[in-house]
Length: 373
Image (cartoon, rainbow, N blue to C red; front, top):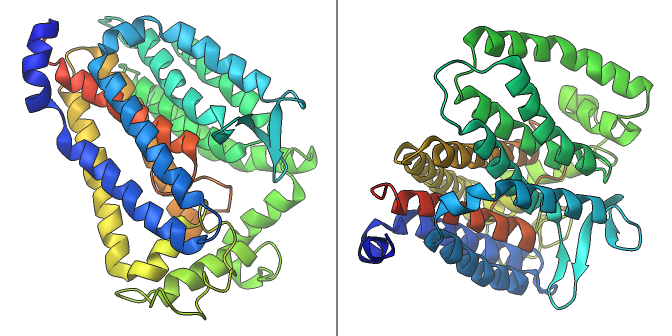
């Protein structure tokens, strides 16, 4: 098998997928350097790119079936990391969230980004078994439990934004695992009915904090939002995007929103707004096109998968990435509340960057072995 893979690896390696990812990271690094020129975030991003490429290749040359066979071990290890980060003497608290671990020589490390991949692997391992009938309720309950354990630990940080990017992983796996259509329709109706009730209960029990309520109110009624208070981030993001025009503003302008530091967290949560200000509407379309092609290549890899587990884990990753892209850009356009979800491959952050390249490496590993039994 190894000899076959050696002959086919260069030909079957998805170079377009890898180059798209590298291109998006490179473009994002330029925006990070512009947004925070004196902070060195762009240097760390380049380091993350190097580590991510090494991780991608290592995963790609490893038989994904071997990785899935030990998915429970990866999953448990991820849960342990999420539990460890909650220890005050270990976890690093930033902006009210204890979600990071400090790694000497590298910086802060966010376990939840990697656990997203291990959770997708665990769900694919469980639901990837051969079946001839639709999913039963006990099987779906196990899937919910697999997702619930990391989500509960992440909520204790608390990081609601990360939890939202986990939910599509389970939905995609269940949808592709022969779930009954009536259960899908019933689940959607139940979610639409329960969402307002859950929000009301959250407000009454103080689970939904006052600042979170205000961020939601900014979206529901933007005209009444305090643009110097909780509506500040959204308003500054919209202004930054608007100043880019069709082809982008002059990056050397001393009076732009980014140059004057009006835009908060421009290198992470609002990197798309910075890119829009620099590259304009045309640049944004090209970025979205790059993301669309990247996701399309991942889906193509899932279609070519030689077995169900390989297909499920890639599609679970696609679901998570699509949700993350949708939430971040929607947040920056003022269509969704600001919840601190980074833009994959573009936002500064080693953990998110490396975890995404690991996921890409997994998809390439599946594609490399589609003709190997």
